[in-house]
Image (cartoon, rainbow over all chains, first blue to last red; front, side, top):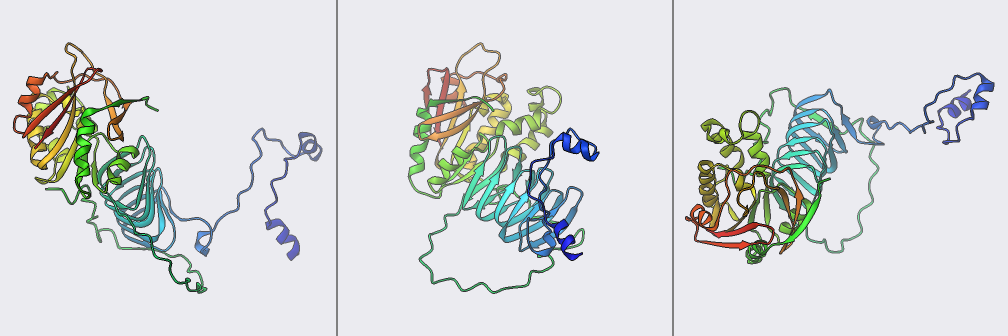
Length: 199
Length: 197
């Protein structure tokens, strides 16, 4: 029984779909839709797989602090901090916040100052109003940006001693923390654009 | 995708000579952000403030009613100045306003130029482009991107009606409070203007 169960869970290789004559023999209703490969499901709550996701209908007011990649496709007001990770603001995402991350990808709307250690990508149709401090930047045609761009040149590190062995740490149930009730920290430092220059 | 043309620009060449003085300058670009301009300016070690001035004009004055008449509405003018030109005095070491000033009516244009002058540090340069051909209903407008110190890429935008057409004399008058005004008349009926505060 266990073996059979295991077999059922194992995703089958994307073999050629059965021919119509085979299906007809088995009496299975046919579909004109093309066969789709089954993609393995990533469970982010178990510490593996893809990024944590705040979906379209989610609204967060307060602070988000995370130690994993995060995709925001809903609305966030406050601060977002993912120091060593990537923040993606999806096409439906509306973020009014100060953002700090290793890498930021904007496809939706972001009002607020952004600081990235590595790179920021502003995709086509994205809207970003705020000051950017980053090592590298990529802006696609069709994106709207208003604000200051400050490229921070990181000096090449000298050949360092061998890195210490990473210690095995049991993954937390989820490492993205959301704090703050509505109203808490409701002044998103998104008085954004051109803070240095503004009157 | 918008068609992109390239052209040599003596005005840009002149403007870029001031970028080489020292790193860490603050440059204002009103063409809207583009990868090539961002890379060009920041590769010098300068900071870039980017905005799409024409987009701001449309946002403030083009929502309803007549675009040019709206430019004499004090409430809309105040909102526009706060949205597009809300900077401290002496904030910038250079400004690229490209062709955006042509779409301002005289009263607003003078207010904008006066504000731009205050935003620039003494000795800072400003590059502007004006259509030189008289008796035209509409002119081609572009999104300008810097390719190199004397080549500019121009991505086509919609044609639009200019608020006024300028000649050398009217431009001298417009920038009379600046320390110097220099013109480059190009083959494609454009006047490139470099003014220094």
